[in-house]
Image (tube, rainbow, N blue to C red; front, top):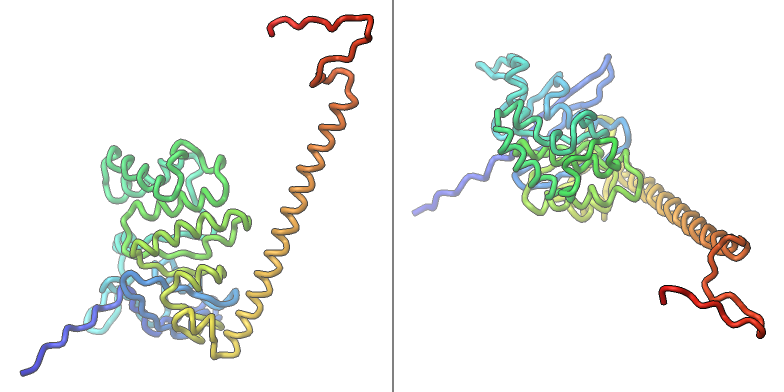
Length: 319
């Protein structure tokens, strides 16, 4: 008697031999990648390695030249009829994108709409959600990303980190099956990076399937289930963070990680130097204020004025 073996669950993202060129320059040279539900996959690599292009191909913001990409069983951008591929219409492609959230390097918020209105826009306009329901959901999502006190703020009134968190809430408002992050912290000042990564960590812990292009090595080490190192349009090395980051095999991976560690050290030194300057300025401002108070005749005295023995102290009213 044999026991039937339960088939393995199909990956949420299945990419096979994906190719893409721009003006004769091969940017992707046959990328294969599987991402299972609930996994966090981090794409590492130098600029120009094809990471962002691959993300944009998944979401059909770029049209692939070869290969195929499936998301939750749907062939992205094409219909397969008897082995022949036919390009979908723009409307059909837009419908496929509804299940995929994407956060860019730049936040791409509507500047004339508040944080809450930005989050509400797509559910109302694309999915036909009632404004009342979209507003309730939008407030919940802003609270989730730590901006429950900012629903009426416009993008110009928010820091870069806050704007990126609004962008994440906006993407989540469509209830995506998959979240794509294209270097979401690269445009932020160092002190704002942590607040965005904290939201992404919470998403990962909640079971969201994520593909993340980033140079944040700490995030990759701590959160990723799989790390993929790309260079020159190909996958050079992939595996768990403990292997790819902790014990890389390929010389190109080793060289990239060496340079990344050096950059992290330089950035840490720059942040420490900037903090020292700020602290020195604060201390200097306090000293100047004290000196001004001591020398300014109009400055109020903290103690009762000195009197001569022949004059009794003046009485103060209100005591």
